[in-house]
Length: 143
Figure 1: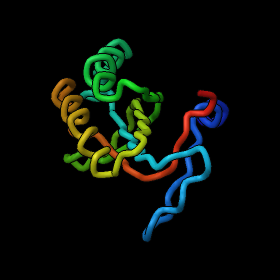
Figure 2: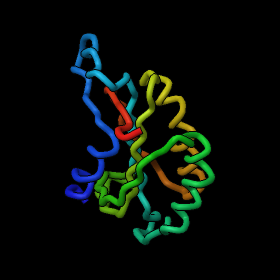
Figure 3: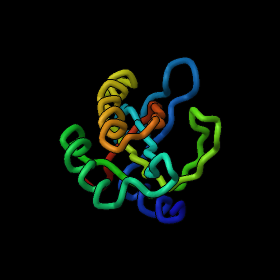
């Protein structure tokens, strides 16, 4: 999957990360400031069996995510590992949602994605959704 992402993503989107601390660097010519939100959704239920099927995920994207981000998104299959409230470490198939939102602050990106995480937790009885937010510069190449 990493190889495929390395081949496809640069052709679709160019992204330069901001420096940690201090002001972000000026965006390269042809790009604009953007917030990047990455959300990781576990797919297993409490007993360790697959709870969120591919059709379930597709319906969730269509009903909860696409209306909030109609300009586009990227969804990856992943394998996650985390420690639950019970202290046990679990590995599970996951979905990674990658959202690049031009002209948006990190706070705005968080405000727009927290309802997605809440909807997923309610709909599929999940304990948590991991969210990572960072700033960068983005451009859709070829338009």
